[in-house]
Length: 73
Image 1: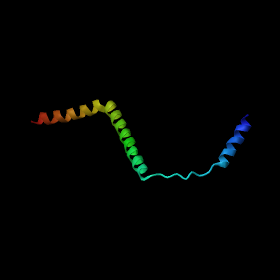
Image 2: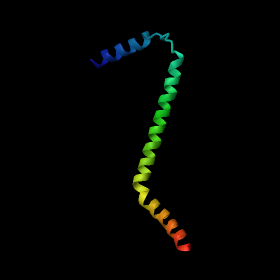
Image 3: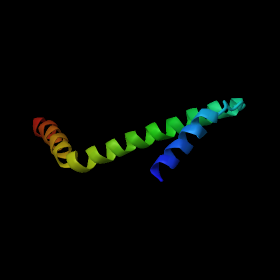
Image 4: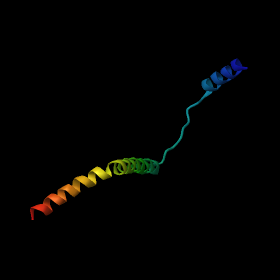
């Protein structure tokens, strides 16, 4: 059975012909816009991760700076 499937697969791959397909100009814009969306999604995920795990140290740092300026007055 495996041999028949293997032979059938080989025959199908040998008989393949190239497709003469037309890609219209709008497809390029669609690819670029979806790529931009995916990059934006990845950046938003990174920002959410950093915000979740590093919010307290960042907040402490800025509060120390604010306290430093208040104490100088």
